[in-house]
Image (cartoon, rainbow, N blue to C red; front, side, top):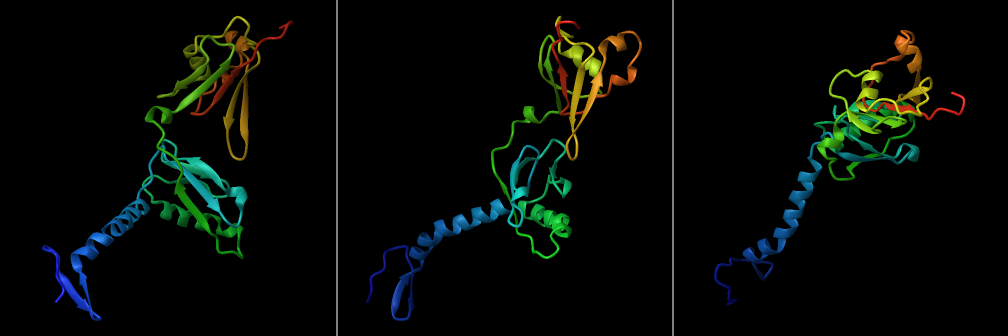
Amino acid sequence: MTAVLPGFYSARAGGMEISMRFLILLLGPVLGLAVLASAAAAQTLKPGDSLSISVMQDPKLDRQVLIDPSGQIAVPLAGHIRAEGLTPQALERILKERLKDNYKDEDLDITVGLSGTTVPEEDLKPKVFITGEVGRPGAYVVRQKTTLMQAIALAGGLGPYAAKRRIMVRRKSEPGENIYTFDYRAYEAGQDLEGNITLQAGDVIMVPERGLFE
């Protein structure tokens, strides 16, 4: 007769006695890892998450993307996709659907994974960036409709060496960027009013230094 430690139960299988409690203790960590893996797979995405996207059939599409404050990402050929609230697996399915027409003869193998820590909330606030000859260059949060002139005022106004006729706004777009020019002197004279555009988050305002004869 085989002795069994107190608190353990034995079961006879194939002539061998196995402690059931011992098996539970042995398999517990493995089961726990499986549960954690399942929970990670079901994790939903949110603004600020950094994602790694891999397309086996086209490595040129491999990239790191950040879910923006509106909950969206932008992927070439797939356009803008609302990722907030989706699991990585659900986003994979959407990407496959969006991209399949570009790879008609292939079953796309797309992987989406969380690749970094969540970005601090402050970094997600919509901003414009002002560089060059202004009083206080830097990033400025835009919480409401803001024009180019208002942004320059927020940055402390134009500096003494600013090229006032050559102010530029660079704005990202698909597939490249748009560039807007602004003549501050003409605006002061009541002209070039349309150059005082309404800014969008991500716009970069560049105020160059004037040349010797400007």
